[in-house]
Length: 433
Image (cartoon, rainbow, N blue to C red; front, top):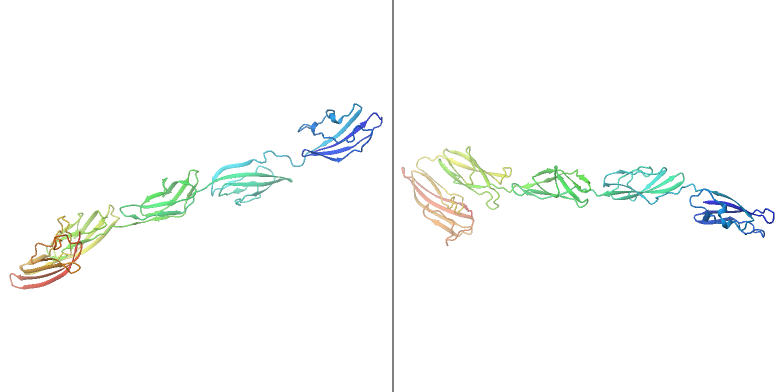
């Protein structure tokens, strides 16, 4: 702002006439405060002039003689007094500049750095400052944020702009799991993270770029991160499970008899699902890893036969047991037992069904066996122990798998004492295909 007072002197009249004038110049506009009084002896009627054209920018001196418009004749004398001063608030350069900070991940903090001396009043759309009246507050933005500071320096106010860029952190506690098969397909776990663009996933310390992991049953911790270095470790754990499809089943034939008694065991483990491929038989202190099992009990007693069946891993196993009774059969004794299962599949094991006779000094005088299907239709009949039923219907076609009913009538005579034993047996058998 420029203020000035100018006066003129008219020498031809030999009398000094003073024409005081005053003005101020501000914001490129010249304002008149007081005009001089018009006088006939004056060369001009106004002593107010625009001196901006004669003062270069940032000048501290002024040559009145260079202001030709102030001179109107050689007899004029001009004197001027000019007072110049600036406002209390200095001009500021770069008022539109923005102070930027290195990018952070959401959830992290950054300390803002005010650049001026004075009292600060901060503002932000998300109110993410710990204190809005200090020069260096702590910011915790979740998205890219502009912070505006109003600075008051001894009554001179201005604003500062600070910008913090924020990368999204892939925060998630969600894991989707599938059920595995023990000894077969593993369970899977997929980390669900729709935000933050994760590209690295960690489960129990194992790192990979895919969010899906093949896992054994157990409990796991997990974390994830993205290309910007933003990472998150979930405080939660997840659990994966599997199911054991192994089933153990077998049928001994016969299950009772006289010592010495030979037992044939048909392995029926997972006959339909077919998921077992390893077997271990246990009985009487002995073991075997064959698919089917044959054993002879030499002494009388009650024995247990156990079958352990599994697929690939012993931890994925199932076990079942059957009781075998072996008795003492004195001379002149007779017993007949009927198997309860057979499988006419051509493997040479239990391909035909027929009762088993244990006889000591006895002769079989008569025998009749008839088998019926579940609807009561006769499918097989025979008047001798051999041949047994091959699993074919009366028309010669293979009978379907399922349950059948038998009735056996027999008569036997003791060779030494002539004792006659006559009896009937009834029961069910299972045909396996």
